[in-house]
Image (cartoon, rainbow over all chains, first blue to last red; front, side, top):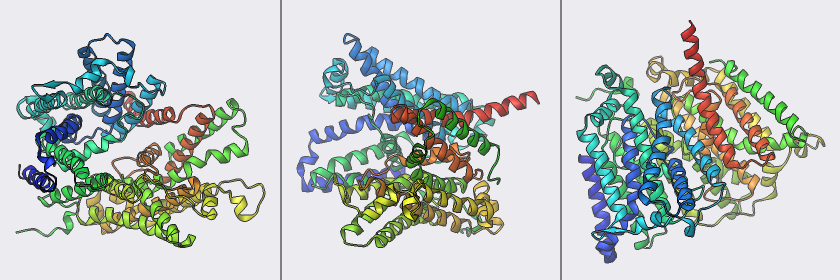
Length: 319
Length: 321
């Protein structure tokens, strides 16, 4: 993975340069802070990267996140005694169900993923409003267990980091070592060949979208706990950040190319840049412009590595 | 490619049904003023949706179109603060829009990058620049002439008392007429369809595919600037989050209008009809006090239904035959 190492080198340079100007940036506390801030994004990116690998895209992650988060917040508000494990399972289940709807439309009906998830994105966001009646679930009403989870620590490591690490490792291992994961990659590389090779295309696609949805649902519960609030516009527009992290991390939108590990480098990059800007006293308004420039730069670099031009008629044969 | 096919007929009958249905159900829905009002929230979106549809037909997409609007509006605001007269403000906005589109087009055609990734990047970049320039501030105090563009009626413009068609809708219709003729009645439009359905074959038949695609991106930028001028005039201010999320609205309108996301198929008449349909629908539900987000939800459902139903019907037809 040459590309990922280049990105990691860039991240290292940024970290060292910022640390040189502001040594506080290099403390363990700050490193944990950055990881903690990035952990929710990391979980979403793991799901999205798998979807992108199959030549799909899931634009509905943010609204699935909001819907699952809101449902759990409402249930938590109605039943303050509910165990946190149950709420987490509910979030996962609700998310998986929403993802499976995408999966059925993509795999069974053969619709383009970008259109399907564009539609379910609006549907999900509207459903959040319907479920909550437009009202906020504010701090004192958020279930105590949900609120406590992101503040808990395991052996000195914040719980969010632990959860993100386990989830990301599981997804990466699934892709790397499980037959189903290998089939997903094969599907993205060459859908026709994959079908001829006997790979159950529909089932795999369904699983992939359900996975992305389930992870979005999990993040929904964690998000509500992290910020101790649930409202209709929760995480609105976040799907583009998720896709941006994947693209920066070298996952190709055209499918078949990229890895969960690379995508994590993209997450790390966004996390480091976001954390570095206030430290070197640059206006946080720079964040988005920088993210945009980096996306353009990284796709340009990606394309340099031997992507075929779309107009082969004009291409000179390279000796 | 037919400009008016069966899908356009479906859309048109839906529009008629919708006006008739809501007209019977809601008091005053069919009054001239309500009809004029119902076009307001759709005129700007129609302009960018038409440009978006042309790009999708050519096999490309521009997710940065709403961010381009924000940047074009910003350029107009900065020009005004520098003391420029109205024509210079328009020129600044249009030039900014064209420049944004040209950057997209250059990256896609010259660097050979996929447009969806490029425009996700430039979406962040353009929106980020607008944020950088404005922070949490807004530019206000636009001249009255601009407000007239956004809020006035054609009647006020030409001095006819009863003509209450909003200027914005007039511009959108004129714009639609222009692009429909270009796409469906000229050889250039045929070439755009050819590029979208088979880029390689189009290139082999001597179509300057790269040049057309570049041109369409620049055109989308200009359309965004036009929409930005209308929107800025209507709301009278420039904020960094101007038209946030409109790129998805534009895509939804284009797809509901029958444009195939794979490119090569679609009708701009259908896109304009879809814009009118959604505008009337949104307006009717607003009159019934349905919140905007529920309307968005219904539109999302319509989008999926519009995709699934034709397939199911086709499958059933094949099953019978």
